[in-house]
Length: 255
Image (cartoon, rainbow, N blue to C red; front, side, top):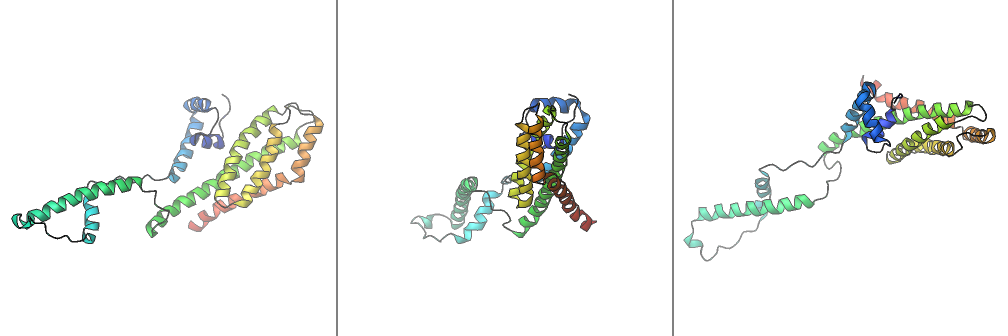
């Protein structure tokens, strides 16, 4: 394979969404540049991985008992209490309650739903960097995606009449898959303006993908008119610049 894979391709490969995974596997084994790029992407994306539920320690049962023992009601002494030493009774009851509490606590722990986010100030402080990293990754990724889309649209606008656009269609198909993922991420992050531009971009990408490879001058002109009517090239360029400014703003404040 002569060409290198894009960051979008490698990002989709990391999440298991990429097509031609076998080709990418083989390419990463032979291309040091793509392997290094994928290593950087994987290291960055792993920073926002959801943390696993911590394992219970050996003292978990005792900790449960220490929390509940003061709330247990006192019980009347059984008829055989006079024949049993008080210290042995207390020790036996405590041991039995520890076992029961550990068992019940373990069962409840296994069936408990995941705790809500930011239940304490410590958890809020811990989750804040992950949210910031996620936002910056989204801004940078979408800005790069818009740059590649701008180059594709420019090629379409400058293509000669009655030309073969098979290469541009393959490029547009890859961009379309990535754009849908970024648009959903933008909606989840509350970035409605970003999602809106990506939606307009997807419509033009779909039209390019589904056009004949040997496109007629009339069909090509129709695509160009729709791109011009939506001012799509202008929107894509302006949004890409804006996202890079927003991404760079925190870095300037902390420097």
